[in-house]
Image 1 (cartoon, each protein chain N blue to C red):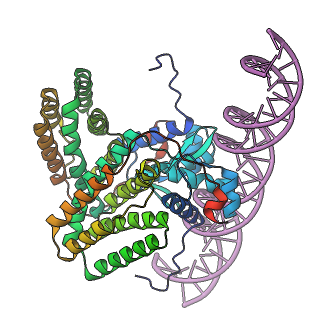
Image 2: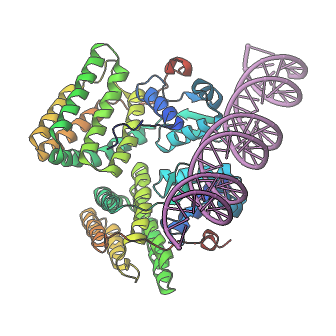
Image 3: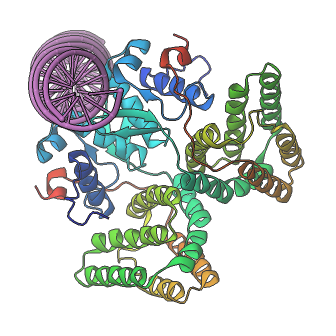
Length: 229
Length: 229
DNA sequence: AAAAATCATATTGTATACAATTTTAGCCTC
DNA sequence: GAGGCTAAAATTGTATACAATATGATTTTT
């Protein structure tokens, strides 16, 4: 639309993006404290901006803010974990159907590049990166469906899913979502709405049943290490 | 849970609540500017708090923030208006079903009090208040269904619906939702999940088809008058 | 007179200073 | 050594000061 435009992303967006990515990739774990000074020093901004970022992430469900105690990466309860996947089951199958009816060849190509990157990350043993890319894959489908509001909701749900997986994922080995994602792409390519809807439904159920919804606490993380700064 | 507890709602929550209510009741119309100084003076807080409040409302979709230009009550586009009701159609029927399966007698009683208040407001000619109560009615159903996440999503959708109605409502006369709401309560009382789901689906479709999705601009509002301060 | 440029004002963006609260460490008591 | 009190330090909450930008009036130019 404006090819030469220097896609200016604000300082705030950058901080939210970096922190969000780190949480999605499990470099910062649920329960970790996000001190305002520390974050501000890392990114070279004042606490004013950091507080905006943390509040934005709190609105997305990624962060919990406790008055006078600070911001922590959220720890979804077992009930919340259930609700996250129930909500996804309500939104995503229908969205996959809409995407199947609208997907262009470029859309398909982009999804395939996504899958490739996801696979590569797994090969390199970067499970966190693969998980993050998997979330991006689901977001892409919502984008193809051209439903901005549902896309927003899904962003929150995928963020929370990442936390749920960090807390309740059963096995130590990584999620292997390639097959399900491949099948979905095929349905999208064929314009098979029914198939896409069913595949997505099954995929989400599959993910959910691999959770072990028991209480336990995760190890804390050093923020500086997680952000590599 | 703690009967004597002084339900302390923070200063910030109070401002968000007051502004949100004013928008829901159409005392402040889409496009109206919310100057930080003005809001701060009205509520007796500094711009720091006001900015938090406006950003929170932006996250809910009630406010649009334009860099260096300020915050305005959001003006959903026609496409967004459509998406709002599509999303509601995806979430609310299922939620009504869940509510029908869980509603207690107290829940029913509360809903009926709601309807009464709504009716009274209409009798007094306070269309905005009635609209706000109608939104509360839908929120109550989500609460009864005991789905916090969907409740959050629905809050955003109902907020946006209020803006959509302000912009695109066809007739000058008020929405008459009493009948649909009464029928819904009956289904909930009977524990009739199927009925509740169908009634909600029809109710939302009914609302949507009464919109006139054409462009036009609304009159601006004085903030002080709207908040009565 | 219309359009453009300029300056003054108003408003928002960010950093900093100070207040309020929590956390931590030290010390005492038992 | 465990528990509890006190004081210091660390951290967050809010207001204010200053910088950057946008807005609106005035003047200048054509």
